[in-house]
Length: 236
Image 1 (cartoon, rainbow, N blue to C red):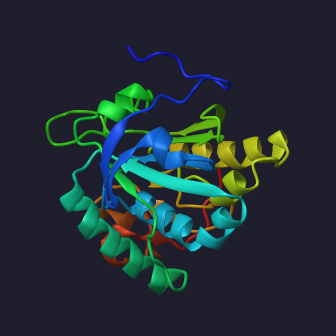
Image 2: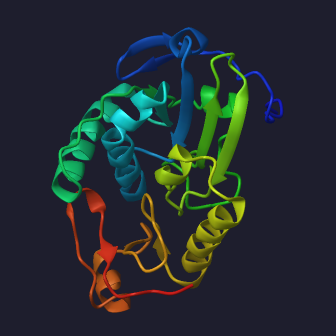
C-alpha cells in the first residue's frame, strides 16, 4: 500500500518519461509551484476537455509561477496522438489550443500507485486487462516540494480548473459545485466536462453507445474524439 499523502507531506520524488522527455520530478519543479493532475485514460471525452482547458490557461499558470504536468495510464505513443486530438478539439470548441506542458506516461501504474491515484470504486474505469485507471487527482505542490492542496474527483466528474486556479475560493461554493456534478452523474448516465456548472452541457457516459444515446437524449450532439454534450437541460 502507498504511504498516506497528507497536506504538509513531502511530495514523493520520481523519474518518468513524458511527452517532453525524461524528468526527475523534484528537479523539474525547481523553484516553482507545481500542479500534478491525473487522468483515467487517453482519448476519453472528459479528459480531452480538461487538458484543452489547462492548455488554454498557460498564461495564467505562468503569472503565478506554476508548472502543470498531467499523467495518465498510457504510453508515450498514445500520448502523442492524444495531444493532436486535444489541440484539434480545443481549437474548435474553445479557441486556439496548444498543449505545451508535459504528460507523464504511466502505463505500469508506478507513479499512480506512489501517489495513490488508482480507482478503487468505479468498475467501468478499467483497461482491457482489467487494471484500474486513475481517478481525477490533483496535487498542488510548493517550491519546497510540500503538498499544499489535494483533490480527488471520480472518473465521471470533470474538474473545474477555475477552482484550481483560484484555490482560495470559499469552501461552501466549491462543495456546492462538486455535489451538483456528482448528483447529476448518479441520476443520469452522464459525465461532466471541465469547468462544468449546473445548467451546462454534459457528456453521455462512455458505456452508452450512440444509438442508445439518441433514445435517452433526443437532443444529443455528437462531436469528434467522442465528446457528445447533451443539450437538453438536466438537473440534479
